Amino acid sequence: MQFTGTAVLDLILYLLAALGLLLRLLGRGPALLREGRGFAVSAAVAALFIHSVLLYGLLARPHGLDLGYFNALALAGWLMALIALVMFLKPAFENLGVVLFPVAGLSTLAAELFQHDVLLMSERNWPLDMHIVTSMLSYSLLGVAALQAAVLYLQERRLRQGSAGGVLASLPPLQEMERFLFQLIAAGFVLLTVSLLTGLFFVQSFMDQHLAHKAILSVLAWVIFGVLLWGRWRYGWRGRLAVRWTLIGFGSLLLAYFGSKLVLELILGRHW
Image 1: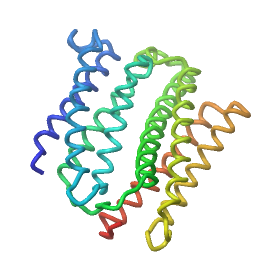
Image 2: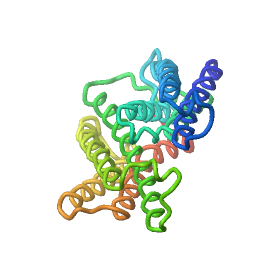
Image 3: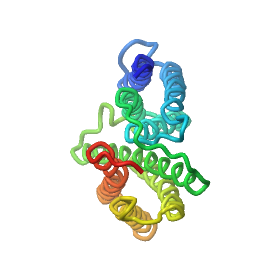
Image 4: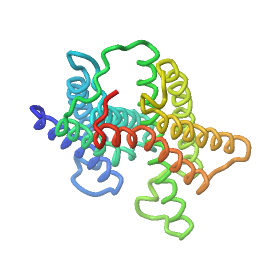
């Protein structure tokens, strides 16, 4: 907890970045915040840099890599913040940072407040490293896709109700929103596929390693996203159907990793 103050500063910077985006979206607030993207970008870059330094200190331990529950959350938060920062290159979707930046800041603060060192991996190899990287990237991308699906649902609902003003008016058209959603899902699906395949290299016993529930839920999520992509390609699935299955698929993936880690590490106190 020695870097808690730094984590609080990190959260403040993330919140300022999100505030800059929000005020710009609403067209309100001080000119410094709402008339340009420079403030939000600067705050986000500074926050991501501090997050990176804190994350390295959390993960890199003398005896191995610590990917305990809260450290994994901080890593996922860092990846989501990185994705949100990249979104500044695609201005139509940069406002996802309004949600993603605060989540990233909270994940870092939680990791600093609740350090418990339960998952030290000293023996590593390339399949395991690739599995970790692709797993976290797929969770993060599909998490962003779930957020995009929620925004798409709200946008479509308000359009059906004939209310297209306010924040809704600044969002891209529905077709563009849906196209971006499926781009996120496709990228996340590819990474999830690689994650599942590389995971087979180091699994010795699903039961002894407490991986059965994680494997089942991960494969279920993979099937859901695969069917959704196929349905989009074959039948042009869209709208509420796409939103519903995106959220269900991400829910299954969330339970597969963070749900199982919550039970095994924080409730049962088991180690890998």
